[in-house]
Image (tube, rainbow over all chains, first blue to last red; front, side, top):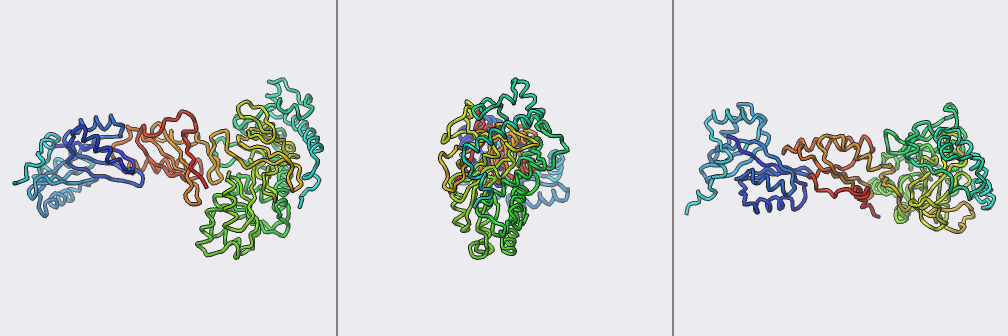
Length: 151
Length: 432
């Protein structure tokens, strides 16, 4: 299954991230994960959100340059060696990872690792064949962020 | 103290009489060029009708566009085989304006440069280090031959390579240099780095600063840093290059050689002449050029004539340090750049959006050009490397054209101010 990552272009200067989060906050879009890649004068902000379509519409309306990219959100075990199992498999299958980042879903139980590869469909098959589960946009948006908090 | 005392101190009436004679001859000569032949026919102008300087405002004006449109030989008043040298305006590639000289033209030019240099105190015993780009840029060969004419030992050092420049100054006991003002300011940090004291460890006493507009403050700074006398030099390739106007030891305005050029200041809007003392656009006519006479050339440089005689005794009027230009030409590190050049290059690069902005900054002693470029929305796919490649490509394309490496910054579409007038495109933050 495929997740749509949002990529936003931003100049490397104060206030750019604040501008983006203000838009998303106002639209009640929930951010699951984010990474930023920068050069000296500009960068790309990557986001995984609960409602990519709504987010894109709002960001475009504000005038920021935005695009989506298909990425794979793999469920891994949140324990030592959990990520290693996935990356060793990708290495063995000679899949090159262009960008990746992760976030915890259920502490000490599950985490999500987002990977961006050249051939998404092929990698997707390999990952599922190896027994990993992946999320789609819908599954990602229905994830309850606090359901794991135990009182 | 005078290179040619009779010419330099000639009474005004006599000087003006010579101007009329030389202008008459120039107008006749120009008739044989394709461009002026056509202009004369169109206007029904007969050069024999020209009688006195009062008729000058009725003569046709010439612009850089005329030179471009008649590229390359449309202004020639002699057969091509009479030419011995060509020069080109700095910076621009493609249809740069090209100026041709006959052997006599070169002699006249060389003599003017020698006159300028001698005026500031340069003598046969001097060692002259020319730190200008040689080649088609007039600042190299123009000064080179002028200094040789005086009899100096000339070091054709060329531009750049700061450590070697300082080494040459020390090894050959250079006494006179020719340098771009922004480079002079930069070079000081190299002196410091090498722990060379220009006052004690070199014999330099005179610096010619030119090819780039600069303020009185910059000159003072150069003089204070180095202990040299810095003299302002003005020239443009259309009027030979250096040697057009130069400061005398009074350092109060630049004497413009009126035996060789007819000088007017006009209102750039009405094109009517303004009286001495009033600011306007400098318009010049060659009075001695054979190969490529140019009549009433609009320099686009803004200045004024300083009224009254100069204490040095020279009767040729003085123009003030330049205030700016009537067009949008930028001068950076001695290179002339028009925003249109940047625009043309940018619009050929896939991925570039619709708007851009040029910002000129002074970083320490270095002038720097920042070009902000909007990225086309459809180009963006979230790939940072692709953006970096675009940035590099733009930098390379611009460098190839303007010969200066700009700092290219990519910005989002619609973020730059919409350009209504030309001026919005360029922000000049360079201050002293």
